[in-house]
Structures are given as structure tokens and as C-alpha cells.
Image (tube, rainbow, N blue to C red):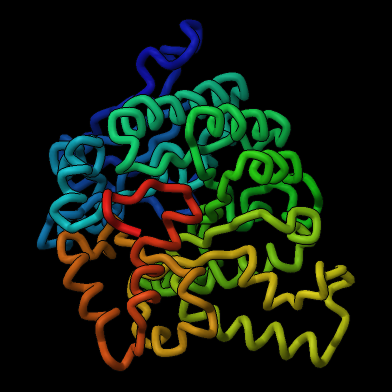
Length: 387
């Protein structure tokens, strides 16, 4: 991933893979997670600037039938299905599940929005590592399979002018999306409404780069220190996306950037009709509009449906009221290689959900959910004969 992609004077400080012994406690304080203790030797993890970043907690378990032994234990690459890290193997797995094209997020060593790189103690090293990550995505994933992968990049969060330049560098070579923190103040950065992020957002608008806000990219909701934290965290994914949507909507960003496209990734859609109703109710009762001038007399709920798109993995109760959102603003996802994934049964799952008469979806709705919305938003080529 990093070999040959960093300046020579930084190369020996790039993230590297280390092997863990049994009984070693691995701190995950930098990820706002409790520590884990390795149960056996031979587990692997990333090491960067003296911190260890293991793959833990069902991050790469696709293909396994029993998650119990892998739930919190750090894993090794030999225990992962090759599609977790090898682009050619990923394409073969996509073929098995009837997936034409995929957008892939960084994880572990980068963080969902590149936050690990941007928090580097050495800014020069961090910027070089972030650029190397993007070069790897471009060289190893996108270039050999330009129809099968939609390139999404990270950028430098600690300086928005540097971050904007990286967005433009990536856009010039085919990147169509960038991943940003959904709630940046949770990571210690300025809030969305401050204007701090405007250089990056300007670059996104000027290059037609979609902003993807992956759930958990800024951390999870604060929880009590004891009890089943893991179960509560994954249960509350949609609540984090709901909070992010409200934060960005009331930030004034869309008054300054009315054509900015934002995708809330892995947050579900069940909460969206509720938020739309709540926005209309708030406006009809307070009438203040947050002191913002809503362009073209659009209400906050209308701006939400103009500038945001949403992703669903399993939201059967919401499908009968999909028209409240609009299928042109919703995309399905498969969450490979996490434990939530529908792979390899994605086609059967979608057929059962979307074809259910109770859902009441038209053929056009189904086409929008499964490929048209994503193809339009990310400017992705479709297979021959598909429209």
C-alpha cells in the first residue's frame, strides 16, 4: 500500500504491519474504543507513529459462518477473504453477488474519513501518507478496473487549503467522491457552520466531487461506560446519521453551496421521513429558519431532499413510504466485508425486499435504488444495454 509511494526520507515511517503475541492488550483509546487482548499469537495489526490499529470487531469477516471467535479479537490477513484487500479478488466477489460497481471506504489504519492520517504528530508525514493512500486506490483499484470501482479519496482535514488541493488533485485523475467527518467537532476540528471547511467544499463543488459522510467517521454517540457498548453502538448507527443530517442542514453550508451533493453512508433511511416531518413542524411553529435565507424559498425539508442522498441496507418498514423521500435520493448498499453485509446473497435479499408487494415499489423505483441513483450521482458507467 505505501511502498514506493512516500518520499524517501519518510518511507521508513510509513504505516506497517506488525504481528501481535498472545495476551497483549491493544489500546484503542485513539479510536474511542475499549482495549482488546489478543487470545492467540499470529494476529496482525497496523502500526503507525507508535500506535497500533488492529482490525477488530467484525470488520473483515465476510465469508465466515461463525463470527463468535472473531468478534473482538484482532485478525490477520490470512484469516480474511482476499476480497477484503485484493482488488482482483474483490471484483470476483462482486461478480458472485451480481454487483456491477462499488465505492469503497477506508477503515482501520486510515479511519473512515482519513482522520488517523490527519491527526498525525508529523504533519509532513501525515500528508504524505494520505496522498499515498489515494495513489494506491487510484493505481491498484481504479486504474485496472475503471468500470467496477468508483474512486473515493481521503483528504487532509487539519488544513482546509491543503485538503482542497488534494480534492482537486484526485478529481483531475477520475476521483468522484471524498470522505469527510460527519460531525467534525467530535474529532476536535471546527464545526461545520464555522466556514472552516469552505475551501474543501468549494473544491468539491467545482470538481463535481460528492461528499460522503460515513456513519462513525467521527466516532459514535456517547454511551455509559459499562454494559453492551458494541450492540448499542451498531444499533444507534442511524441516530448518528440523523444528527449529522441536522447539523449540516442548519449549518448554512447549502446557502453557500446550493449544488453540493452529500451522501450519508451506512446510516439507513428509516429516520428520514421523521426528520422531514419534524423540519416542517419546526418551521411552521418557530418560523425562524435558524436565521438562514433558504434559497428559492425552499424549506429546510426541501433542501434536505435537494442536497442529500441516503443509503439503505435493510429498511423494510420504510419502503412503503419511500415516496416521502423519493427513490432518486436513495441507494442500496451491501457493506462488504463487515458482518452486516448481504454478500453473497445480495440479489436474493434485494429481490425479497424490493419485490415485496407490501413495499409497493415501481420498476422505476427499484431501478433507482439499485443502480440509477448511484450512477447519476457518482457519474459511474453502466453495463452495456442498461439505462
